[in-house]
Length: 126
Length: 142
Image (cartoon, rainbow over all chains, first blue to last red; front, side, top):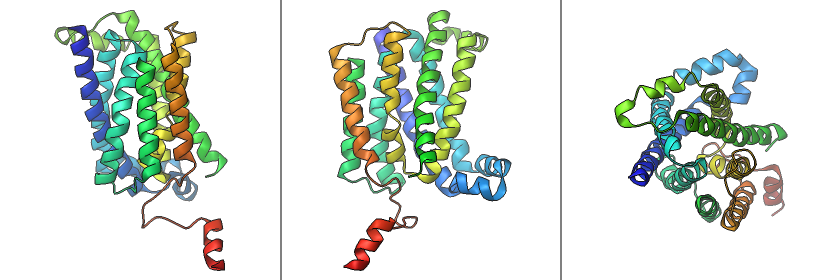
């Protein structure tokens, strides 16, 4: 039963993280290069611009769901299972989501990197 | 890629690992949390490990947002996955969990994946992409 709870939480973490990552990435691309922006108009202007972005707010909401699922899962399972297992699945999900929703050019090199990292992270859980 | 950018990516990895480990330590103090006792999660906010973990995750979040403002999601995620290697080391030496041969293989695979993505461009959007100076000069020569 404990296992079913843990893997259920991991699934929620993965779906929420992928949604959150894609939304946040889109938000930050809209905001633009933070380093240059800060040089031009200061840190508070940057923070204000980020906080006003609706993709950012949606992304944070999705991340909050992922975070609380993580808190649940960590109270049942080892950090060395929960964190790598959810991260591993999130990598593959993100590579696909980035291609379809963010139109990133996910070439062979990037698929390979995502797959290697996902495998590596899964092995960490073994 | 400037040194500053590498520093931001390193910050993403390190802060996330430390934050997750502190949260794990804190939640172990709490014992199991069940759906019928959701209010115990609020009590978690009084645990110093949890609070410390949240602070580190906030630092992680600012570094992560900064990285996403100048790099692709499919670049930032693998590039910062060295954090999981760090997490395994923290698990072994601080939380005293066991690190098996299989986990060392996992660490190796992650390192290969990170170097694969890190050797490519960080941004692939057609409308934002600028040719790298070396590439541009090579094309001019042709």
